[in-house]
Length: 108
Image 1 (cartoon, helix red, strand yellow):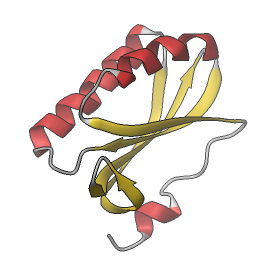
Image 2 (image 1 turned 90 degrees about the vertical axis):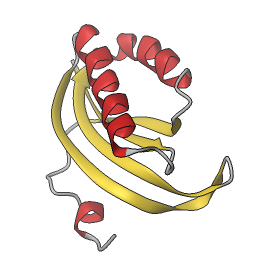
Image 3 (image 1 turned 45 degrees about the horizontal axis):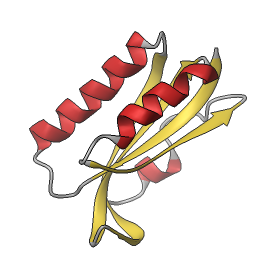
């Protein structure tokens, strides 16, 4: 199992229940691919560095996961189908960062 840190960036116009269901769907996809979620942080609504689909803000979620790297392609294909997800990134790491992250401690 490889260690990854994941950042998901969601549409800022989503109601909280839809945002939560998107996160639950992602977690289910991960678990069906025999992945594990070790930690999770909700960074909330934040400014984007640049506009994405005419949005200036977005909801950020950070996860620390373990999964076989070969299985990520299937998860990425499914993430690309979501209209509510603006961007995502998977970063392979040797060791996970200690939580809470600095970004989580900043004022929102």
